[in-house]
Length: 143
Image (cartoon, rainbow, N blue to C red; front, top):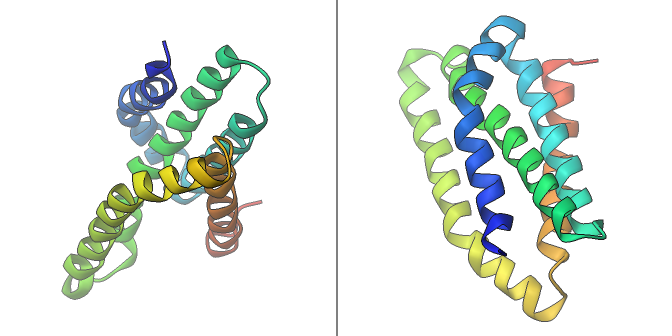
C-alpha cells in the first residue's frame, strides 16, 4: 500500500509527460515550465502537511504532473535558448544535475527522515522548487 506514495508520482509523471510536452508547444514552454514548478512546489508542501494517506497519494500524483511539466520542457527550452556551439555542454550539465539529484536524493531524504521526520523531504523539496519558481518566473516574465 505504501508503494503508492512513490508509484503515484512515477505513474503520473510517465503518463503525462508526452501530452504535457505537446500542450507546452501550443501554450508556451517557458510558461508551462513555470506553472509546472508552481504545481510541483504546492504539491510538495501539501504532501508534507496532509492529514491522510489518500491525500498524500493524490498530492504525489499532482507532484508527478508538475514534474512532467518541468521535464518535458527543460531540454526544449535549453535547446532553443543556447546556440549550437554550447548546446551540448548545457544539455550535458542539465543531465549531470539530474543524475546528481537522483544520486543524492535518497541519501538526503533518508537523513531528513531519520533526524527530522517524514515530512521534511517534502518541505525541503517545496523550498527548493519555490526558489526555482521565483527565479524562473522572473526569467520567463510570466504573470
